[in-house]
Length: 362
Image (cartoon, rainbow, N blue to C red; front, side):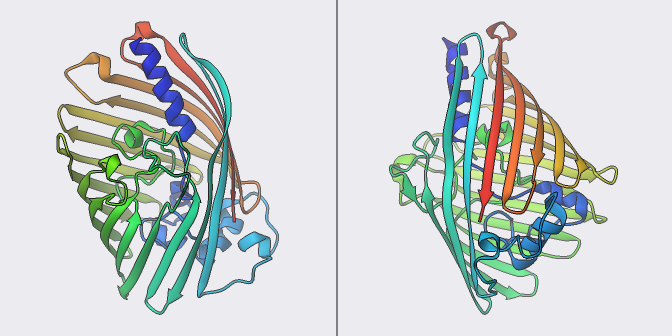
């Protein structure tokens, strides 16, 4: 029964995984700061005009002039009104000794807009929330994020509202152990106050979260989060992150280093290690290698380990993923991933997953 439970949980986690438009692979092209492409200091969500141009010139295999603009150029560009949104669908196949399933699911359908008023930017989104989300708030129609951003000095930003805190390498894949097992699953945005100091060779992002007072049934933790990153050259990053949270049961503290290295022109390595002290002491890590074989076409391999209780072998989880990610033209992303994972004792058998992701951004 325990093995069946693990397999079902894994299936639900993959089905509910939603992605935020943010791609750490851009570090290989010299764009270490998320602000180079996004409105938010920690990345994700609305793209700036420069970010849209990079989506055609750097991220995509092909692209015509002005194709990267909202609705392929049908909406005139504006420095005041920023528009965006995401539509994502997943075809998932899973097989284990206890589960054999195939399912198509709409993951996300959001519209997002921002208005720039001098040094202030107001951002909000409206869209669909999957009922299988680990943080389902009771309605399929919701606002994933909304905040006010104040650029009060050249490299200083203050943000207040509902959004995700900055921790580690900002991968959008919520099925990763370092996200799901550390309670940063889909829908983990909370109300927080954030300060970001973004310099040319380093950045610091600190935030305080009051949880989800709008959805008390979720019992979302209240937390302080810190992320410090040092840029080494144009294509490397060293990061240290920490997170202390107050919970209704046991408080927790998470800390860990992460790093991004570009070894060759198109070969990048991403690594992260996290230690968690909660009711038990836990250890998590992953190593991801990404190779861009042609502009917009990425091959990647990833190894993950999660041990939420180092005193118990049954809490150990291991996964290996091989995949291809392709950005054929601006607004489009396609991904195929093969994942093999094990939970607890090897006698429970492995779970094999095939993920086919389709993503369109406005």
